[in-house]
Image (cartoon, rainbow, N blue to C red):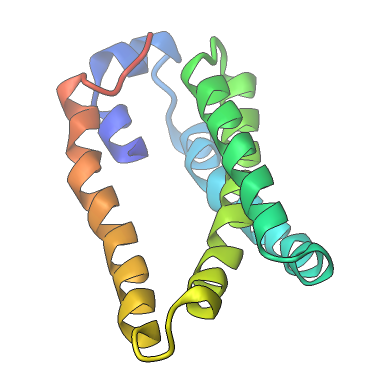
Length: 138
């Protein structure tokens, strides 16, 4: 999605045509937030179960996605992306485990494979909309 946004002239003009290290931080802070949160999410998931961090992650993910979409300056945008990374780790870590635990034993392998496949399939299907101005809020 970030690559799609970076080709939009509106996005470049709104954020002052970021380049170099600033553009790198804008892109790298999302996976960095995920990486930092995985250690805490694993403990939280073991302590409180799978559904609690999943629910918290879904609510936070929606909130921080709105924050990112409404960001009016670079620090807010970078903060929202970092927090969105944390929130998505709350979703990504317990989801496949919960699906595996809840699936009927004969369907377990297929359902888990479908979850992992369709997660990336959805991202591939929706990413081109960013370059067609359908996903850009300014």
